[in-house]
Image 1 (tube, rainbow, N blue to C red):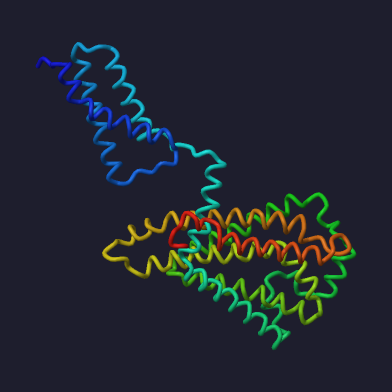
Image 2 (spheres, rainbow, N blue to C red):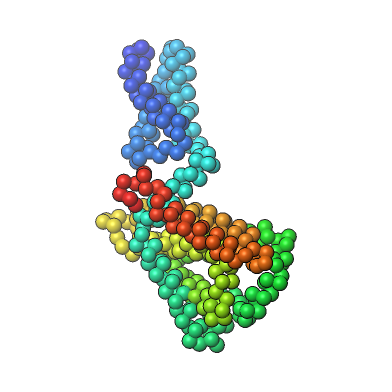
Length: 334
């Protein structure tokens, strides 16, 4: 069959132009995400352009048109089958820091339930230790907390942080790794319909409440505040948010959304869960740095008033971040 190339080019030009416009859109912004219908359209246009190139290759056609179509096909193939387009690190970080608080606010019910479980455990641990001091070995999360708080405070103040010499970075990395593992575990336990997540939250709350009550009863409230506030003002909210992710996952498994399958429901919350655990990881990295380089140093090295003030200001910053950031892009305020 003899192809009327000029007529063919005129008839097919609109398809080529549409396809090129989609390519330019994808190439201009690596973060662009196509809707399902747009993906289908893109693939359809790719096949049409590739078919047109095949037809023109069998005919006498000017090299310029052939080269143009070859370029479109190559670029399209790269978009569909190449490695994932890389978003610049800074842009990705800014996007995460903006999406994180919006995602948390969007699931406020799960956050408040998480908070209730954690601090319910803290109240239980504090009350249990106050009413039955002999339960201390059972309630304390770490063996080095079994001693008398006053003895530990005296030892820490005499030591003046020398036990951290040469190992602050290692200790910080260990803290980050452990806390991030716990957070991922708390979120993943949402697969138990949220029951496992609730147990982890309550258990961690019990330990915190017992430690706090032990130091308060021994008259070491100032030391306790100066020790926990600098890193705890970030670490505890991060644990709560990881638990929030677990409860979101559990709710998604339990409650149907219309006629959606479980797979479809999980896909609907996938991005939110990734955003939450990514933000939690960043918070725990910061908390690990603060705990290693600040929280472990006490008077006379660093006055308790300085540490407490820092912790309170940091806590205020965390609250402001999660209540205010991202609201301009969210008309509903969520």
